[in-house]
Length: 623
Ligand code: M6R
Image (cartoon, protein in one colour):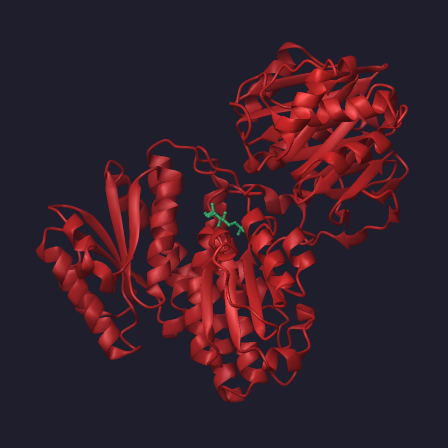
């Protein structure tokens, strides 16, 4: 939530790109993190200038066009997802303090802002917004003019130590125009390294156009960037060093590549996302080697229970993982929404493996749940798509998905990559614990390697799905049914439709139908059914075919997603989308795709902003 970017360059660099260009480019790339309002502050000729505007970044650009800013080589920029205070011009960041000489932007929630505000008001500070950010700005300002004596780094450190909650703060001051100072606790921040210039961003896409060299920061740190230096200190004042890393994708990967929306592009990226996630995971003899795991294989052998923690789409990937891992490894797997987990006194010990699934690696609910599990003695493994993000950094082990940057708020390729990585984890554990024969593992891996080509086949048949989406654009409600691994796919199909097409949609376990949801079926009610492979357990397929008949008998319009050659569904479906054949447990990698295409096309037909749906943000960094 909220995108943050900071820049400092040599003044002569402004001939190549000015601070404003860098900030606006960064905000363009970070807008997926929040788009309620946007703003920038630059420092030039001893003055801080700001422009800020509610609504999307385009509104800020128009504002800057109308009132151009002076050329500058240092500045900060923000794109907001509102928490405290409505998304108005006034509440947009930056917020000013110290008589307009200090500008501050913020991501997160400052929990003790009310107490601090009362103290600051008593000290004579006046506020012009309802935000918690302005409280932080005034506090930094007080230190800058008081005990920190004109030292922005020290003022930031002292103020940050007083704040509670989650925050990334960036500040510039007219009296110290040679630096941008930032601090972080429980909120994302990375540094980008340039030559004669340095960058700050909520994630690397904030500066990917300018550098692929980056530095991770730890918890509770302050970083000061100048044109020549990146200096990190802890909140207690001790010096620290960040961990350098190189970004393994380039700016082009975060462009639409000829598609109308990022979501469409990312749906079409899926063959590669799965292929890249599988890449380099086996040795010459075909055995799985998960090098990055960093957990002793002996420990993985002694795990007695796995708990998967995740939110939203990632949690549905976790449910698919449960079916596969329990089947292959014979270890119990629980899947829990991260935000529910730590409030129910879960039973965890050092033989519990926590597997967190997160595209962003910054989801606060998941981060907090992982921290809680660690405190209870569990081993923690992150399956994550974002290098340098907090959850993998704080986990004992990481298995990166290689889906590339996912920009659309609705997750697509990250979902398939998470499922793929979960399969790898399951197969690896089965190999370690001798639960599958090596030949069985190789067969499953061989089938996994065929999946990218099969996803491409589904994509190639996308027109049939898009046509149906156009025809159904005015439907007020759509239901999704599935069993076994088709159940999380049904819920994912419903979530996609809710979040981008604003249509009431529900995903049910098909077996639940007769326990209540069937009462929703009325004449013409559209019902998508994710049909299990007829090559899996016979009874499962037959039961779902019966479910289709049951809803159809009550007037439903049935749309089925079935395996190629499944003739049993034809008589009971108004429309069938066939996907290529694969092992039953691997089916979600194929059956999800038509549902994504459907939601994307339907939202576009309704004229909605597919990539930036209302009220949402890509990465949920507040609880
Ligand atoms: O970054 P994460 O995978 O941790 O995010 C989890 C959810 O917020 C995310 O999957 C969300 O549900 C998406 N908008 C779904 O499309």
